[in-house]
Image (cartoon, rainbow, N blue to C red; front, side):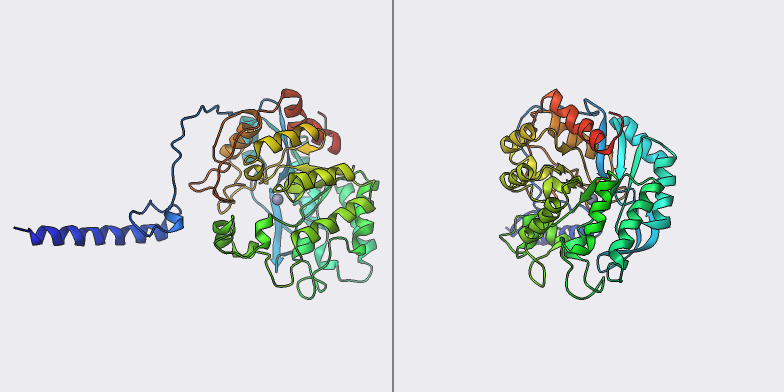
Length: 401
Ligand SMILES: [Zn+2]
């Protein structure tokens, strides 16, 4: 005889459990794996069954200069454009220094140091208080870009920033993707707009390298659909999609940037995020061959480099004098695990560069946050590691190596 009561209790119990699960899934950052079909993509968190050796790297083999970090940011933004002189500090230098000492990081370059009085306070807080451990870059005065005389004003501000201690200029992807003719409205301003020529030249005259982020991953310019390899990331950050509307293609943006590099040969440029197209190392190589004042760094792109380890290794061997170590480390950036300033972040970068470990996570996250794949270590030779970890950056920034 069928025990109908027992059967009903099992069904009801199961429904209750799944209701509890969905409540918890709503609250917790990491939902527990669900059972049955259909399975939501977010609940699919497969664990690799591969048995392969792991070589943890708690400290880098050589001291590190991280050329791409954010310890401060402009306090005010509108439509993606930083405004005003006020800056917000994301960490106390003492806290950062503790992590740096444990991870063998000699120097962190805080790219978003701000402008004017804000820049001066960033320099005081980090660079002047701890010489050699922090280096601060300045930024353009975006809100003045539509005013008469901007070109001259901006060049003067580069000189003022240099006197205040700024070691370089950082240009966010604001240029090309957010800045508009009326600053926050109107048509987009092009990356090679001539109003910035005096700024690029001032940087060259003062030997201040320009760290420039142009465009974004190729998938960010495609429809956010079931064919997009970064669907989950774009779904989590819809404002990172530059598909449609009045956005140029990523190649148009990068070609405009390359025209700037060609027009200002005495200015040194660090094309951030592997030159803006880590998915196409053959193309980045062409640019490096053509533009001797172009350098690159790795920040937030080891996911791309590590899924093509043979091409990446060849790239590092060929351009070993022009690649720098960078992470995009940002204290408190928990929404983007690939750049949260933690010890684990650096351990992953070190493992990627130093070991030949196979198929490991490129970010500390239950699901790979920039596309569902894993990476392979490059096992770079010691002379290349030394250059990438600090020699190339020390030379470009005139720091002791
Ligand atoms: Zn960055």
